[in-house]
Length: 231
Image 1 (tube, rainbow, N blue to C red):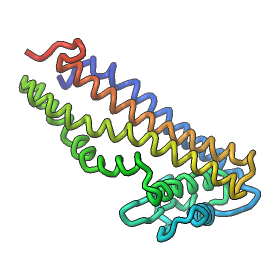
Image 2 (image 1 turned 45 degrees about the horizontal axis):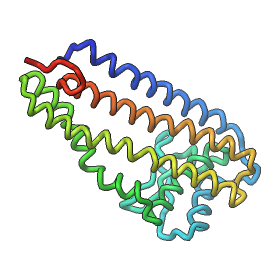
Image 3 (image 1 turned 135 degrees about the horizontal axis):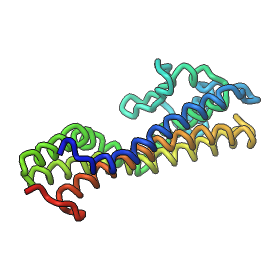
Image 4 (image 1 turned 90 degrees about the vertical axis):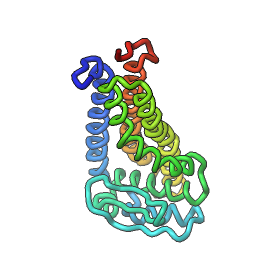
């Protein structure tokens, strides 16, 4: 089980896509981080303007350490931006800041997929931590019922990655539309910010693909996809 070469046939495509996505997002961010916007707003200023224009109140914007550690915390209603984005006045900084502002707007507008994802956080974390372990132990003990318990638990993590896709794509769409609508970037500059967000989207696609492939492997090993059950 633990040295099954078939596992790598399922694992490698997701790994390659993840490596490519990480390379793409870093190289694209770096490229457009060197292109300043004509209006000259910082990422923090742009995010604040977007949130205010959409009629959202009560959201704080804070600086957080790390590279591309940007995120929106719905529990605290805090939009946290990395130093390069918080202070940056580049097309990269504006794109990322507007994307995270998009999440704050989604939260305020009770965007359905975001609400669903929030419900899935705890089951997904539990399934990701214990699902694969339980399934692996089940194979080692030749206990099919234990394998299926692990598969069901891990399915919550897979579902979380799938629900994340429309959430992230919608936030990026909102970001690009708002940046142009408010005149924070020109139509031509918006192409650079959009390129950064499109590259970042690849990381979520890669995560979903990797999770699906892992789930398919366990279904295959359990004999539900033509694979041979452990005897």
